Length: 165
Image (cartoon, rainbow, N blue to C red; front, top):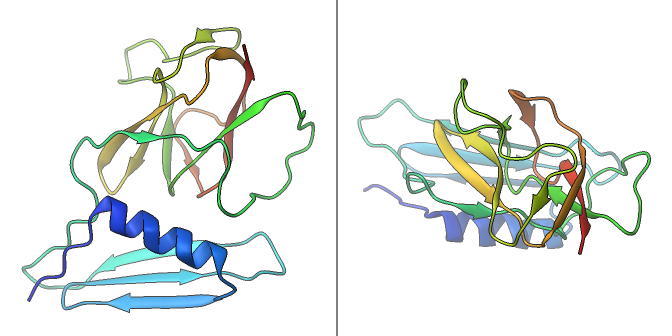
């Protein structure tokens, strides 16, 4: 038997865990293992997912799924120096690798000073070999980009700050 866990179910599960005081959670199927560990006293939360050696694979994310950047993560990320209350923070909705452009030879989605609109792609997070575009939830101007291209990011990490208009 193969257990399929779609993106929405995984997101609901992680949100439920984030709102609880559960510090460790493990979900295991025939062909996968999902482990979430958190230490509420520090900022080192981790999520790991492993495939077991089997011919079946778990389908965690549909291909090319667009995921909107959250402006209010369910668990607050560690405080970032220089945070301003008039700016909206675009945070990583998952663990992955941050990319500023759709491809290596293509221009970045946004630059500092770029004017953006709701629904506009601002970056890509690669997770499990899938490219997920993050779309802005506000119109405004890009004030800060806090992550270097090709850098691994964690769930809830601030990627950029926007000044809403």
